[in-house]
Length: 241
Image (cartoon, rainbow, N blue to C red; front, side):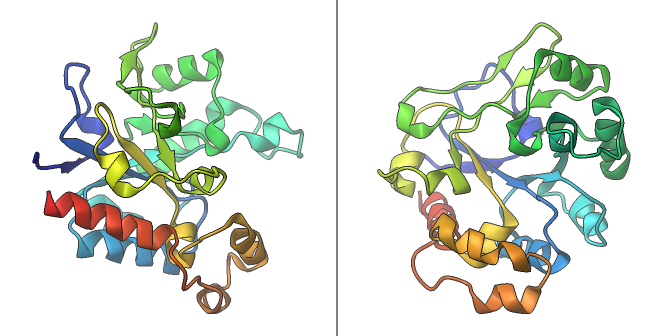
């Protein structure tokens, strides 16, 4: 049985078959520091390499940057521009640039809500990003995934599993099933779901008014099998291969 290794997005090249690797990615989504710290401790406990997509400044940014297991990318939010919600930022370029300044040295990007267009892809390239992670192709499709290069030399890195979307499928894929797949295996988690151990989108919506209230969030965490349990099961299976 092959050994499965954890890798970061910036290690991806186009010649690999990826059969012995998985990529853990995390969309920060403006999580409060207590939730970021919880995810950080969980990753450190299992010595997991991961790529974080950053949404905002936090006192923990320096801690993340100093951890050799971690890579920091950016997670820009274009929703205010798209939905005409009185945007403070006047352009997509300024939104991206501000996050690059916060992170420093980012090579990968995943937009909030996976917002993507040919114009955005060109802006990503012009701002020296290398990996675009905005394509979701669910594992249920049974397509063997691999990265590919587009016209402006950006490398497209699809992910095949995402915590919130996994809860929308009626048929659930087990960690064992996902790990046994051939090809690129990129997982996408969120600190809020890892902390809540979210087992349904109903719990997530119940928690929404309290996203900045650590004590309240702690009080409504799920005791049933949820995202945190799935994450731990996935990691422990990787380590036992």
